[in-house]
Image 1: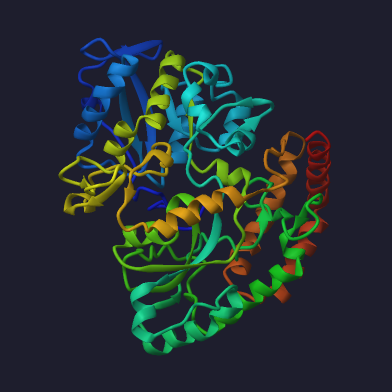
Image 2: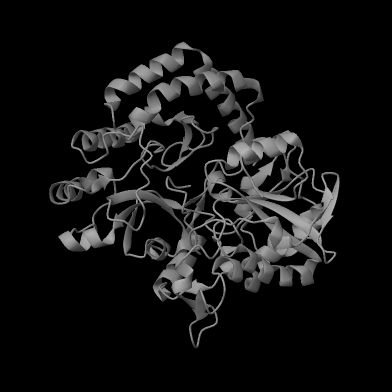
Length: 492
């Protein structure tokens, strides 16, 4: 996932989906039985992340015409904000509330806890069509203890990290990025912007920045530095801070911080650096085949964004878990909920009507084509849902700004993308929970400053590693992880 996820890199756009009860008419029912709408249809209650479209009632009304005909159900989408989603969903899960579908939070942990329904059998009937459309990597990456608990949104099953450059600034100063492949290659361009655009942040970064990108598969729990190095021995789990080439990247970031290219308050800053503004020059973005090169970023920004990849294209657990829908284990409508998810992921009319918004107002078909569309002025408002967390991106109409070459490259990227050897490895933390907490507390004292280049990594990394190893928890966690990974590889 990228470090700027609020607008979400999607093959369909920005903005999340939300809902009101009014969209489904007068509802009846309680926490113990399924709700029904005033026209007798089963109401499927879905929780989504983000901000509610202004025209949500219209979007759902149109979608529910088809959903109702195909399933006898009516979809009710309700919103939890970007910053509140995890916290509120944890409360909903722990309270045992009778909801049906949600965008998963802490997918593996909550699946292991029994919060989500086992979908293995439902995929054989109610979800048969959507299952057939999924890349097998999605199933591998979302299988927990031999069972599948997720309906992943098919999109960027593989992705890479990229430098994203603000096109107008590139053009204004004639900056050539053709030879930029790594962090050390940015220096001259950053220097130019620093000297000529004092109000522009050369390297946009915030406190959530997790460190420079590399060909790593992060197989550990969040915030731990343990990885499988995809350029090294992929049978071993190592600490990224002990890999020389990674330390070199951190040294480069520190050099840039000292030169004033990275914000001085980066470890505390919440500055958003809006994609379509002239407040930044370069940033990092996650891009995959469903984004068709730079076309999605450019459309979201309403300006030219140029990208340069800095990692390889891999299928990993985190790329297969970007947007997982789950069905609550407390749902009274598990089969019906899967039917609704099947429609969302297989019916082009339903999905495009939600993601692009009303035809004729937000978009129109390009004459002489079957799946090309032109977005209209209405699309620029808060009048549609996002593709990354709504449904199968490969049945979405393709925007007219996507070239035939980009489509061909997208297909090639999908065919050539490699699976990480660790795809499907789920670390069971039960025996080392206390140790992980101890490690996390220590890392929190050092990691942000090291990751953002604020401090000298050659000074601070040894201090951090010494403190981690003194506690004893470090080696215990690493050994347990390697033990489980060895077993995983032996049983593949």
